[in-house]
Length: 484
Image (cartoon, rainbow, N blue to C red; front, side):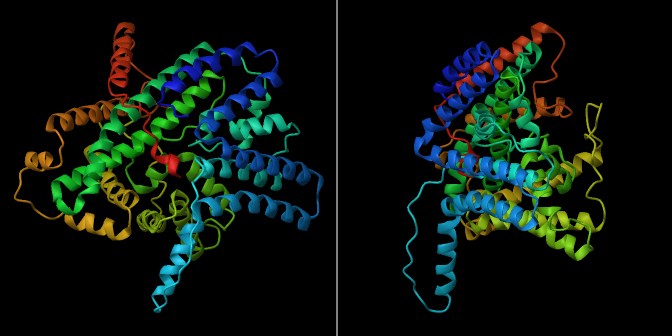
């Protein structure tokens, strides 16, 4: 089930009503929440529910056994079993064909033409997200940073919690599980803020991202026929699209959780206002970047064993982050670009220079900060070209053609692509609205958290955003990060 669907429009109020009617009985409430979560996921493809159940059961049992064992060897074997189950599913469904194809391409360099068959399998939606979520639980129990839960119901509900099951945020058990295990009471203020955050997420997805997608898909599909200005605009629009699409999902997920009395971690903190790449990564997909920091970078040695080790670990983080996004060399190159931009900051010790909110308490940033924001955004946008393209070759051609000229006017090119200048101007207006609200709320969790105190003006804003969402609701358009 998609957040931006008619089904969800009916699903959420029904779940909300029944859920809070059961708040006197925690186990019954959690059982209902688990059933609703399985229904939410099962309406996409019920067959893949078995993967979530197997993963949940394996880590639940392993967690209990880890609490009983003190021998290092036994504990490592149990952790290895968790890694085998979770990463085994991930490798089989997401990466098997990539490794097979890459091996075949490598062999062909030596004159062989292997006839190796790949698997015709569908990637289970959300597998990268709930796999990392269950793994964090087992690793934390193994490290004795938390005690395992004895309740199978609570653990299964933690793994399958529907608002963030499919595309995050990737919640740690140490943060979400205690909320699942505790009695919740409805907070009106939190609920209202949840509705605002859902509205803002829908605006970013339905009005901004989906409208950008029309232009982006056309440009990237015909890039070899186009020239610089259009290609640059296509890349720019994709930067906006992927941010509004993914952060829009996170806003809806976090807002929905607030309606259920549960707090999820902030996943985006206005990353396009970052002044350098290091700050960008502190603000983009926070749940994933902190996951890699805590479960990969630090265990590898972090920055403790000299610059060479730190250099290796940084490359590992960014390459694995790229590979996490998809089984394609384009994602690995995307990660490599960010690594190459991040590493100089580490060696010059400027990677933690910007820990504050840009222009905090001011209407506008300093001119120098504005230039830094633009520079960072351009770097990120160029890297996104690799993320969006089908191959590394396509990415390089796209970038090279960005510097080509064309005898046709901008309007003529749009006409040749069957695109309307008026529609493009309208989408640009929507982008500006999103930028303004995000800038005004850059110190807050979402774009509607702090609005003018005049009640009438606030309600006018809500009504306009609602009407825009209704107007541009073209149907169930999937979220970009569902493919990861």
